[in-house]
Length: 194
Image 1 (cartoon, rainbow, N blue to C red):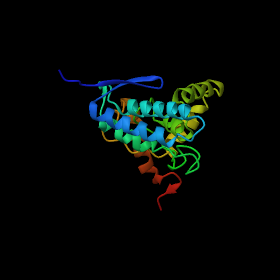
Image 2: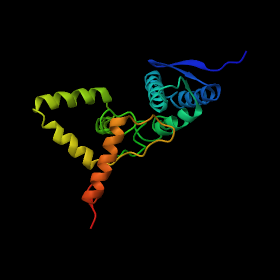
Image 3: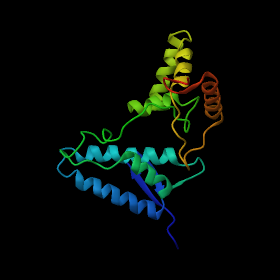
Image 4: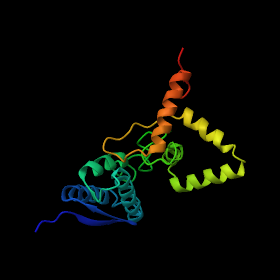
């Protein structure tokens, strides 16, 4: 008999990890727990950290994949970063890493504008999509022009190797926007070719 995977509950999510990924996750969470000993609310921070790990791993898993491996866990932990001990660095986990506003094709529904905005402002992407639809209806369709403008102006985030597969519509939007930018001579946001 051989154990294939370990089922783990990370805050509100339940995932299966292979043995090497589980061992790495245990080390990461143990290090984080020891760094948070002096914090007045370590359980709340650890719960948020667990949820971030679950969300990042889920985002990186292929649709048919059921077990998280090191290939998904390591990039997730690198993106999240290490926990800062109280008083030893930035006030939050995310301040140490610079953010850039980009469209994200992997996991996108249309072009990745809402997903990119949600990551940049650290909002729930579903909430942002609902707000966008309400604005679309409330403005009589003028929101389509704003969305198209953002599609044209926001650069695309690089595709993650081994990340989620890009759906058909986001792939077509990405190809069309890259074609349109080349025709207009726009190299990036605010950069017009001479």
